[in-house]
Amino acid sequence: MSFIEINDLSHVYHRGQADEIAALSHVSLKIDDGEFVAVLGANGSGKSTLAKHLNAILLPTGGSVVVDGMDTRDMAHLWDIRQEVGMVFQNPDNQIIAAVVEDDVAFGPENLGVPSDEIRKRVDDSLALVGMSDFARFAPHLLSGGQKQRIAIAGALAMHTRCLVLDEPTAMLDPVGRAEVLNAVRELHENEKITVIYITHFMEEAAAASRVVVMERGEVVVDDEPHGVFPCVEEMKKRGLDVPLASEVAWRLRKQGVKLPDNIISDDELVAAICR
Amino acid sequence: MLTDITIGQFFPGGSFLHRMDARVKVILLFLFIVAIFIFDTPGGYAAMCAMTLGLGIASGVPLGMLARSIKPLWWILAFTFLIHLCSVPGEVIARAWIFEMTREGMVRGFFLCLRLVLLILLSSLLTFTTSPLALTDAIEALLRPLRSVGVPAHELAMMMTIALRFVPTLIEETDKIMKAQQSRGVDFESGNFIKRVMGMVPILVPLFISAFRRADELAMAMEARCYRGGEGRTQMKVLRVTHIDYTAIAATVIFFVVLTVLKVMGI
Image (cartoon, rainbow over all chains, first blue to last red; front, side, top):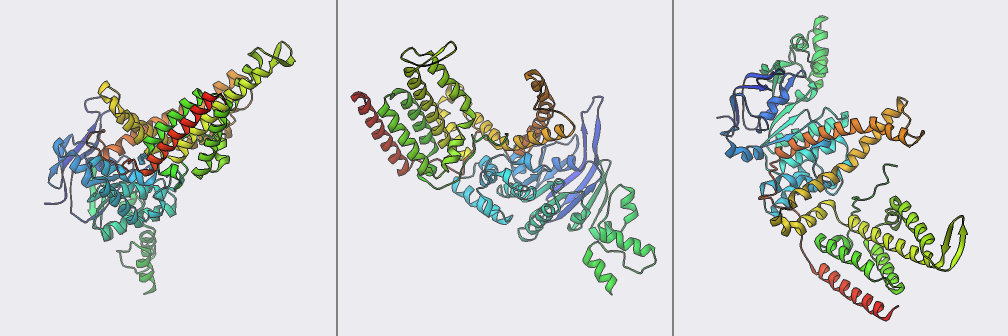
């Protein structure tokens, strides 16, 4: 049994009304413990809707989502599911609740009723994991976007979450902030064995994942490892998506007749292939 | 102009005022405010001023910063002083048009302003030395006994926490909207009062819309982090009454005894 099992999931907003929108139709996915899944897709492809199903913020209108053996429609497990699956949203300003960093990180465990000493320890540990220990007593509005997103990640970690769902966490950040957030997520995935579901528009970030899911009009159209997805440059462009710069360069060079392998997705791989 | 607001701005530090239990601080502040209005002799005022100054120095908060908290109330102070200066009967020291300024008015106006200043300074000292979360926790704890009569203590505290958290964010946003409007030719500075008030509409509308959107997202983020009201919630920073608080309470009692003696002796 996988950690997260999405079976034939459909979601319709405003069902039965004039503005009815089918955001997800018949999506089935299995995500195992310890995976790093990047979810790609154009705007309106249903990525965020999918993400919100993973910790029962939205409930399926068809099919089911089962997290660690618990069905999200079962209200008895609602808080267990939300504790196991932490969410990080796009806008860093709109998910920080307290006026001091460490108080914000403590918000989750406080809601779970964790004893005070244990919360203190969890907060310190979580801030250390995202490299923000020095900012424990700062006011959030004094931090950069990347730092705020790392605080949001620490807030989820403090609940001892097993899985992080990040919904375009870098969309509002500058390049430095993007790198900070991605590195923090990668370290958590590698060192803490946290399952990561990372929704993004940035292909370089998706290339860091171990698996890439591409969505289009509410359906999963590609589900493969990055080396299988990004070299198909024409197919990706047809879907309105980009590919990492290295894949694009390799593709163009191949079209010009340069002999290059067709599985290049990172700068290092490209350099190695050209220099060979 | 928008960065002048100091209420709710915590100044981190390690003074005894910072380490005191926020509940004790709130209660003592309340007693001090009552005392300001009871002990109205010159000796009493002198003692209160000395006490406030002493606390200000002990808090480690820069005194200039503390003094700046009076600035927003500058006009109220000036107005209060003028009203008293001209309305209290007594020995006339100056005349302007139909107004007669009296020595008694000057004295009374001065003391009333002094009261207001002390009140603001002491309240600011509380907000400067208490983190907003500790303050809201204290208010929640102090209101908890009133829950049985229907006072939503936890909800009020949570509202305050969120409000304090979003004050700087919304100030920043207002500034941005104003600049965006100004860059397109909106004039906020000139024109009569009505014109200027109407000029605020293009600021308020986008500000409200964005605030509602923020509220929506924040609610979702809170739910995602298992927020379900005050039931069964614990706190990382538990308020504890320590020996510092007992010392402060004892010192306050002694101080009030001194004030009472001064008042009885008429100094």
